[in-house]
Amino acid sequence: MGEYNYKVDLPSGERGQSVIKKFAQIKGMALLNEPDRKDGLYDFRMVYNNRTYLYELKTDDFRDRETKEPVDTGNIVVEFESWDKPSGIVTTTADFFVTYFINFNEIWNIKTPILKWIIDNYELKTKEGCGDKGSNTKLYKINRKFFRGCFYRIHEGEETKHILQ
Image (cartoon, rainbow, N blue to C red; front, side, top):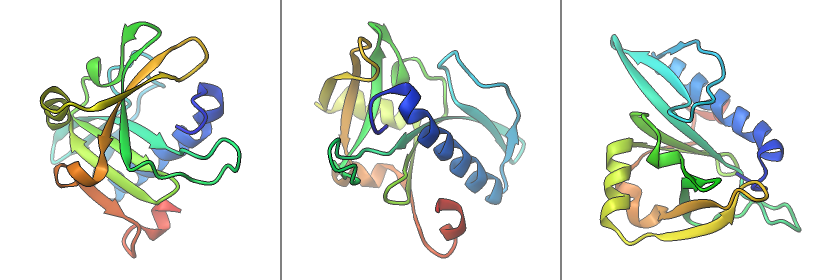
């Protein structure tokens, strides 16, 4: 997410998917090949220890509109409505929800039921009017500092340096 414009943001989203898939494969997971998903239920499937896991992946590439410099809002944003229909966290069937912060070389991973529990049990700030023109996409804003203990976080280091760059 950088420009709130699907066509403009697509390359960074594809980069994020590539990074996450590569990292998961290095950790011993096998990617199940599927055509590009358009149903909004999950982004991709991986197998680990003979069990299939579904992943929802978001790439955060938020930048200042004028300077184009990376901006850290301190939040993870989670879509819940777009084009006046439930979307994102409301419709996903994924086991895990992963956010890749492209500008800060961090991966934040959370089990989807835990993320839904946070959304249901805390009064989170929301943002409207995001996304493509006319979509009125709506997002939850989840404070990373407050909820950091709920996420499995991977920061760039020796183990991940060759993946996250």
